[in-house]
Amino acid sequence: MTGRVLVVGAGGQVGGALCAALGGRAVGTWRTPPPGGLSADLEELAARPSRAEELVARAAPGAVVVAAGMTWVDGCERQPALADAVNRDGPAALARAAATAGARTVYLSTEYVFDGRDGPYDEDRPITPLSAYGRSKAEGEGAVREADPDALVVRTTVVYGPEAHGRNFAYQLAARLGRGEAMPVPADQVSSPTYNPDLAAALVGLLDAGTRGVVNVAGPEVMDRVAFARRLATAMGLDAGLVVPRTTAELGQEAPRPLDAGLEVGRLRRLLPGLVLRAPEEAVAHWAATAPPVPWTASGSAAGPR
Image (tube, rainbow, N blue to C red; front, side, top):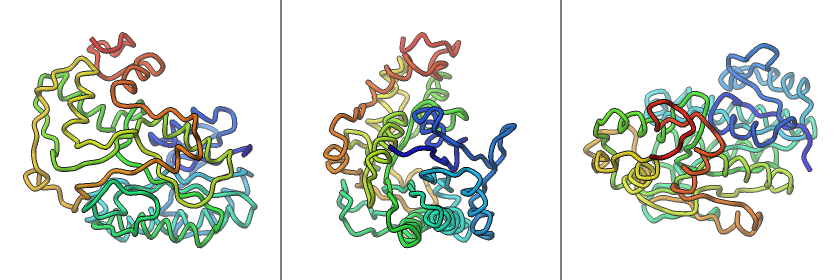
């Protein structure tokens, strides 16, 4: 079993879920840390690799998980150099520092390394990113694995569930529909929505099993974003009729998206046969039961779906 785990990006939704799953084994970093917490900024680590060495030496972990990153797809398109620093160069510096210290590296990647022409994708398909975000992540995968040949790359997508900052799609949907407002959602983007506690459980299991290479960790179903939004809304007791289908072209999204995407999880199921991967309805029920307050009730109580 892996001992202490340095979670870079503990303030984000994946890092937060992972810290919760690891419990006392987690050592978190934040861009702006709480009292006594460790500070880490991937752009700074890209410019000053010695800072990564200092961070790993101070934490003395058995593994380093790079859960932070620049995930704003359109922002990456506007600032590709920053995306490269945050998603490629900073993680590579951490992987080199981890390998030098005898620790393993885990790098969080994305289905956006694929072009979305003929998904869903398994781990062995050639990567063909369309956007600056996808390219920075694809290059990040390569840079991390070059720096640490024992690294684990975990590709995931459309992550949702409880998070401290309440920014993921489920929160946006609950807020809009809870106010009775219509929400446009792309009908032509197909993916594998992933509940963040399930992603965290998979990360812990793969870490403790000593897994290396590339593994997809995603939800159990491939669906378009409208179907996902409507299933979430119904489970939350909100009006699914307020979800308005739009094409990606109509939404005018700046960066190109992989449309026919999604991730196959056969390798994950073979590696961790007991792992639970929840569909949206099961995820919402679990969320209401275990992680109050929930965003879809007027009071914010743990009453669950109406």
